[in-house]
Image (tube, rainbow, N blue to C red):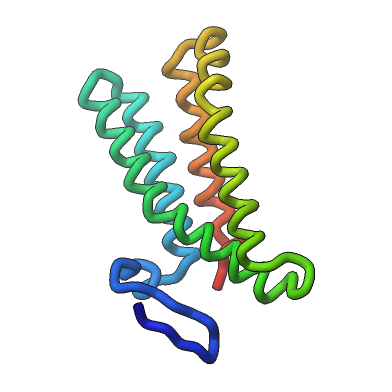
Length: 140
């Protein structure tokens, strides 16, 4: 870990993308990669297209989600001092994420019954694109 104690910023060598660019850039590119990748995989179809789409969804979200957790702590630490602690902010984001993890599959299953699985899977793609489009909210 490298820490700049004057600004309460710590990072690891594993966080090279955020160190090189910015948290906003990582969330924007990650969200767009996830959304466009899954959409393209669904449009291509077949085992190869779907596998490629899921791989890009995972790659995009895997770099963006840690930045969202980090942003929650930093926003609480700077904008909501005395109202929300950084640990509570991270817990809130974690709870919302876990709720999506638990509630998303059944909701997508119901939607797939109504419109088909391929169309239902566009919902996570659109949500990932929305994350990329609103990346300015996690600005350092």
